[in-house]
Image (cartoon, rainbow, N blue to C red; front, side, top):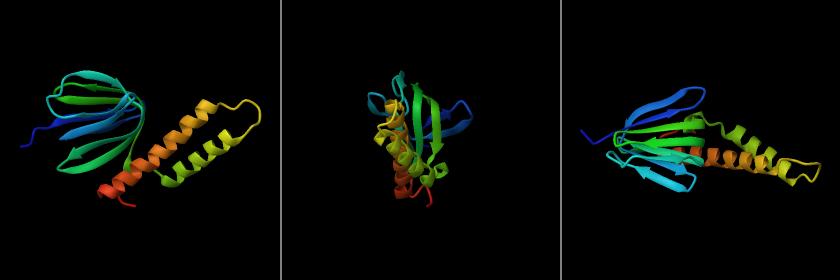
Length: 142
């Protein structure tokens, strides 16, 4: 049997995923990082982007936004503010969110929260990118 590491992804709303996997790649705030079994322990804040894991040689994708990843030699625990499996992502909803954020940024009325709108646009972009990656890998249907 292959050398595996346990991946657990939890949000405030639910336990999204608990799987034995071969590899985990995640978007840290200082850049992406990868984890194999027997990795040195560490803790990282998560950025916005696609977390992926390999299982039986296939890549699976999960959109994450904010939170932390704790790595031990036998387990990766992701405590994310937001996490969605690629096949749960609505591309149409993400496009509408991006368009709304773009309109808010373009507005020159009153005080809009520019930083909040930019973050919303980044989340929408990365949701669509996560979904596209999963479709390209053949682990998510259109």
